[in-house]
Image (tube, rainbow, N blue to C red; front, side, top):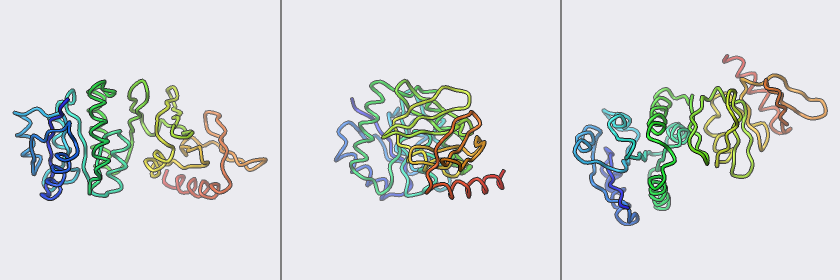
Length: 257
């Protein structure tokens, strides 16, 4: 299978560097075009269908997101390319969208190639959900707030409102999401991954295996052990080392509310 790719980046060095890395390391990818702007890319895709777009997140004049509505998400995958921008990466990861961090690492590029090939052979994310994830990403990036995240699991994709997450439990490389009005969802990512995504949304890690949403915290107990009781009745052990951080976070969260 040959993937026809488009590179969209206003920086010449970044554009050409990615082109050469693909040429030298990705046998399944054919670069059909190199564009300097979203405007050029819009004209290109009118006449030339592509399987994957390597799209710079932040470009002058036009945001890379302005290209998204014109893409056929039944066919086209998007790989965002970005220099280190903490919030952009957090938003991208929260929406289960692929990205490459500049300067681009060859191994990460190869992994992205294999992931796209795998998805196209039995796509895990249908076009509607994929487009919704991209739309969520645009809003999260623009508003600098993650209000929805995309969870990938064995049976498909689930988009959840952050405020509906009661708590998270981690074990090895898996995390279980406990939701307000839905069944638990198990995803193949570590608890640390979600700690980084949600740390500005009223979530706090209280134990090596637990993150709680402060919106659902009912009571704190210091009797026989340190325990956080949630509104749904769940009791979660709090480690002694994390107790002061939890109390401080709760005070700050109460003030914000």
